[in-house]
Image (cartoon, rainbow, N blue to C red; front, side, top):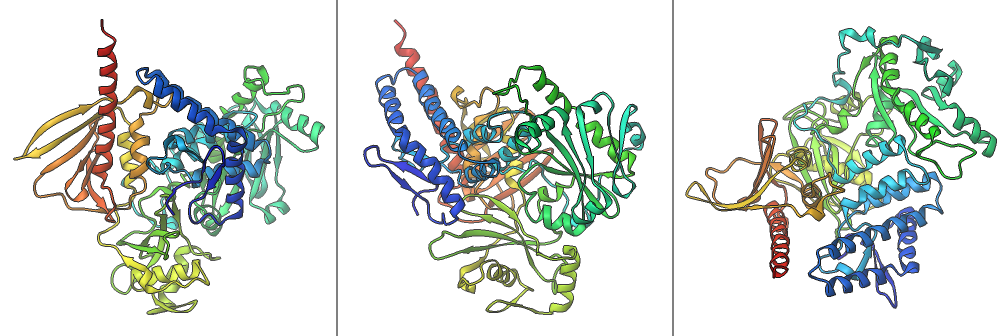
Length: 601
């Protein structure tokens, strides 16, 4: 219970330590594969060696970079060794395991342990390597981007309006939609009188397989498109095709809700880009790289074949726009419902639940999906894992649109709804939470005493707003409010070694490690600003103010101001976390200054 992530301890007698709650056999297999590679390669010896050398050469700041680089390379090499033994599905699962178990080692462990995922800042790179194992390219980059966003947990939107998914207004197609038609397009007939066109310049490089009317009755796919050379070489060498580029499928309202929204967008590679009165249209791409050439042992990223492959992806936007215009569809963002602050409009409440040993600890977001106010039933629309910070959308499993399901439940249920082991009052957030938990964890003893209604109204995607500010270039300061004025103002400079290959600000990743885990509720601004504070101001004018008093946080984004506070009494407040970062940056700056002073004659 005292470790947040799997880790390897001990040089002479290695021991793998698991966090509580690792009971999924597939997850356990991934963890053991990874940690046993570390053990066989004696990676802890490398970490001890770098620590010893760094201690001897404490005055050389480059040694700290070397130490981090050695740890990074150990992880990448370990991932590569594990991936050699896995198929495509196994590699995807392995990446999901890293994502699910990403957590820092316990304070003080340092060089003593090798963890499954030591730094979220490096997790993005590892996911890129997994997605593009053996070969890299656009499809891998798409998957890596999806997973990297999940690491930060940041749906980079704020203040989205709360509209039920079935009534979410699609984006209007521009009046000039006709201009989106390809002038030199090569057309293919699809089921239901639909047409796909691809640019004539690339049509000879593609193989297009439209679905038949009979096939459409069994599956939602309209068409599959492959790169011709990769497809043919794969069939010749292995009897199975390579070169998959994209497919187009369609879901009706129920399929869209159950197969996309209810599974939080799935495993990646699927985006819904258009709709009509009956269907949502999805664009599916590979989650591994499908480029293949018989005459290339290893992919030549500088070769002409690879360049031609990458050029095909540049045609995707034009093909999508043509498909929308040619078939009279409306452009939409089918994933927007997953990024909104809330799934349903109206009032929202938090309910906390945990079991006896806290291996299950979650915050449930409750909404009223049918009737607002008194007399309206409540439902769980989302839950957050308090141990790891992951968030999950909740939709009932039903063969009708969820809005109809809840409307019927509102009408038929009255005051109570039958559940396993008794009845729960759906007219209260606590009752609806208990109902959902007992159905979700059937067979477990879940009593009303294990849940608690939290004070305050959920504030929505606060981390999404924070990340949009902290990812910008800006200034980090600490000070104290006294008599309405700022005193003791101090500015901090970011350490160079924190930069992610010279691009990503460290503050986004370092602060996100902790702020991402908070559940937030709306708060009233204080009558007067007093006490200690940390402030981050971006060049755009956006900013975040962290107050020591009450754990209050003010987010200024896009001209709007939001005051929030943590929903729980966490051991450390947001101010504590940010002030720790200030201290770390100050210590490093002092360290560099001492080195510079000692080097002078």
